[in-house]
Length: 637
Image (tube, rainbow, N blue to C red; front, side):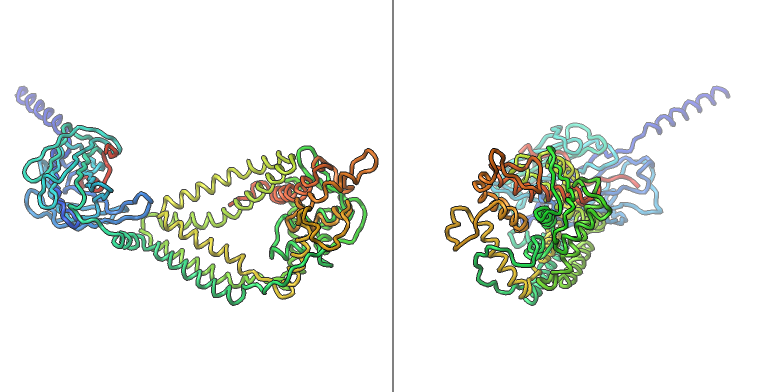
């Protein structure tokens, strides 16, 4: 009796060991591919599996990718029509499920469980758009098994039939085995019957597969023409078509609006004027000429206040500026008076243009801009910003519609987020890069101020990196073509924001006079003889009109004309230098450099010192296993 019990326990142990070592796997994966002359392909996959009730309980599932990205990142959807599913030669119930990039086919029924054993599943389907058409040949680059299987594959094979069952057509047979991206060569080929055959010569592990390449001369299969390719591109990227239509509508709207209200009055005759228009400060002329405000207007106002004697500008050896109130009370323009109150209103007599004073300097910029807008906007020009509102609303509607047309696989939310984020981030990055550009322009022209230029450039680098990353994420998450068109929508709004501005008739008259004065300021010294009775060039004239030259962007040309005059302006052995400035940028033999320092370098200093730290958020053998069409994978359920 005891002997019988021991025998039974031994047999039970052997049975347990056998069951514990049983492995579900694919014993044989064979694919038959029949290419047709229209470029479509009939595929029959025969998959022999060993089921142990571990993962293969009801049957198997097969994943087939139907959505790809082309080499430009655009969405490509291939045709896929499932014809039949069978098990061991008999029709098998199945159901399908849409996946992010394709379809999953479940063979079997929810309530029916399989016994342990071997089962052969057959999937037959019709597909297209898997062929490559090249200059000297065409080819099929096909992932036979897919690299996504949960099971090892003991053997894999494929047979390919070309149209007309031609065996002389192929000019190249290749294959790759192994994991995704590998170039294993454990295979052999044969030509037998009416097909080209591929066989693996070693088992494939989990997530390994067989990929084949068959090449043939051109003309055997019809190549899609340009119209067909374009049709596919637009059908599969409907969001791009929507966005392009939005760009067209936006352009039509803005052109009509511009024709109605944005066209400038005809300019008058411009004649040289030797004085600025009376009653207008340098900052006012810049504000009206540009129909907007910038840091250069603030620089021009500060220099004008210094020339009048209200303050003195000091620049240290590192290129940092300090403004010192002199105690004199000359008559200041309204905007300049606002600056004086903001900078020195608390009884202080000096302030450094550095970031720790960003609150005071930022407030001075703000009140100066407000004063100029109050005095000159609408009287001398109109922004027509009300006409931007319909354009912005149309842009938002187009973006939302285009995003809703994207496949529901996470692209909608990510693309939308990146677009909104970049819209704000890019504004800050543009401001930082403009400040860096101004700083370097001033440093290169004066030979000084390199430290602030380097500092603001280093400060801008992380934000620029964020911009590059954001653009990369936007272009890679969705279609690059869609991302480009959506950015074009934003660019159209920015472009017409400037173009919709228009001077009034009073403003047009002032602009003509300003252009005449600018002509005098910017003329080269050799051309001065063309002027009739110009004023005598003196150091006092140079200083008086320097703020206007800064405001109109011609400070370097203005200063170059006075090189010889300023060299002779000293007394005795002393050289001339402006009373209102002390620092390293002044060089009596190179006043042009000084002009740039007062313009570009000071503008850069204002840009960096008027913002809080961190607030400028700029706000043949080329294949591999797993490549080509087909692919996917599968598992048990």
